[in-house]
Image (cartoon, rainbow, N blue to C red):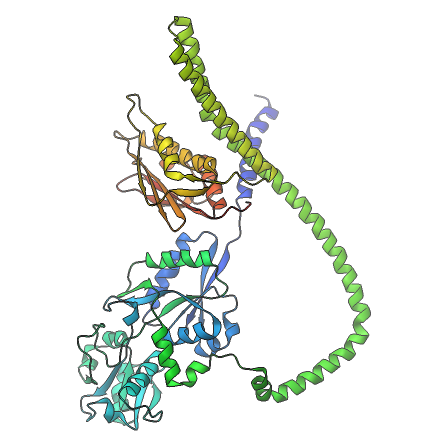
Length: 578
């Protein structure tokens, strides 16, 4: 074989694959989740699981945890750039009022009835102490472990107020060591008289220490199983900041509810924090007000010296500006020229990108036209064969012609659809029954005995706003590959399911093909790098591209006991140009 021929056969396929792969490259941006530092030890395993699972399912964003202290959270600018905040109930209540945060999901211990009763505080005293009731705490010191959330102190203050001890100086609070072995020493040397502790934290300390403590006025037959003194309140919460979009927040809420419990804690629907707002307001606690934005007058009075210094600096800067105007003008001209060069480079880049997209559409045409063209060829050969035998009646001819027209129309739709992509025109979106579309697709897959090759199950509403041809391309590609994978088994089993909830549609195709490895499953997430394992080939790139156009994504999972399960998420929204 000539050398130039070998070069063409090797280089051209490689260049085509590289061009197609390039169009799928994207940059993953951070998904910032801020976490309150104080008191997060009890929920840290749940937070770590959440981030781990989120990083596995989130394709476009990379979850990042940013721990912020209470002092930083009081500065509303500290949440700039953060999408979500995980905070204790009292901190969230303050930020909800003064910063506009919205609850997404609340933490619920398995021992509580519901998220509205997920937290409380245990007031503990030494067994050798004479303190028996809350009334005995008058003018006493209550120790709070350093780094605890403000919730314990708020719970105690409200409990005292409810029982008639509303004097703000009724008790004093003191930060103590987090080491439980030091607590008994604090009791014995008189530095504290009682201890305010989260019941979940108290449950985890050694039994030998718990046996030396008494729970003050324990509640029984309550909606919180662990021993506690105060009333129950909502617990920790994940809240959405102003940076998070509404659709993303709804997705996050559904994702959190799907996670399993960790160390007896799980995510639950957002609790009702109105009672906590009332408690914080009635206590008139400085902590609650510290999250309020200060007025300009307060800021100026607190920083009068700095404002005077700023005035001097501004005056100096104005003088300096008179001498640097010429340099600024020169630099402006240079930047204008550089910006013009950048615009030309961007225009060149967009032209290259468009050429890459057109190249990829050509592959889609070649791949998708095989089915209708193969059908047209088969029906044409059947007509010619029956004509040669002289047994072609009018009914058979009419049936064959209708099939030829149907497949020809389908091929024409595919070509027209690809031309829209290439020319940058929007797809032909409309409202249609996705259930009827999937059923008609399944009816086309029959074995030689006219038995269905694909089982179909549907749950939920089926009205969908989009392009029927795009949905059909997704399903036909997945079914085709599933059939190829299941052919290697004695009893092929292919299942197509449709589920819908709040505008989100989940289409799943599962087969019982050969078992696949973890590495192969991981590689399936990379565009145009998958193998035929599990029945996925070139059509996977089409599935991913269309699902992303509907703000969805594709998930891969091993089927039990063997085979592959491919799930495509699509979101039915108001039409917009893609």
